[in-house]
Picture 1 (spheres, one colour):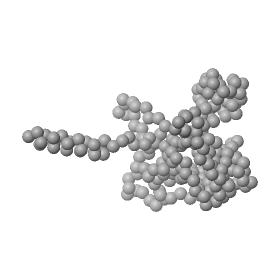
Picture 2 (picture 1 turned 45 degrees about the horizontal axis):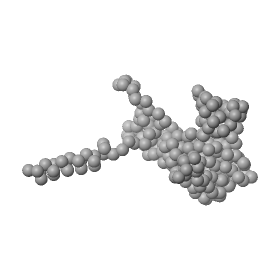
Picture 3 (picture 1 turned 45 degrees about the vertical axis):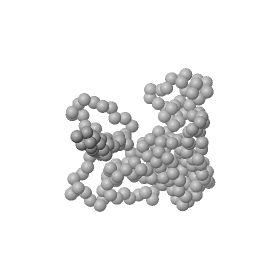
Picture 4 (picture 1 turned 180 degrees about the vertical axis):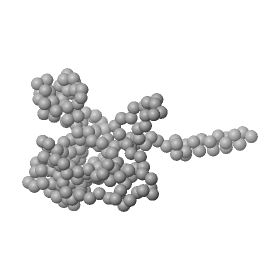
Length: 225
């Protein structure tokens, strides 16, 4: 009788641990998702619903124009073109997106992170200096830089969530294709996120955090606003 009970208990625990419902949380596809007790409030985690399969066409799985540069970002000397679920609906739920990045000579894509995706890049034109930072396991106030100078045909990967950058060191335009393992990787631009937040972070915090005076903080706010 005792043996039978142990068998039943073991079977129940095994079934519970192996149940798909007891796996782990899915990776978030948006920055925040505030809980609300309202049956009429419907927010889809990926922001999209699915088309009836019988109405799907090949056009849903196709995008044209990645051979052409995208929209310029004022003041940074770069242009981007994003291919995601918004302009290629067939990508929905597949966990991928692509960006074309064009950098003018000596232009920098500032330090930034993608909280929901790793990024695999390949250079198709020009010379690009890239790198990402990994925190030091012993001293959390230090980091280790992994960097390379890339030429056409070279491939590099930025691990998910780590701070990284891309800098065109050449004398001509550089073009990079970036592939993400998320349909919504997110983007946190470090300088503007810090100095152009709304509402602003109080001056004392920034001055102490960056060891600057308040005049310098004001100048940085103006620059990134």
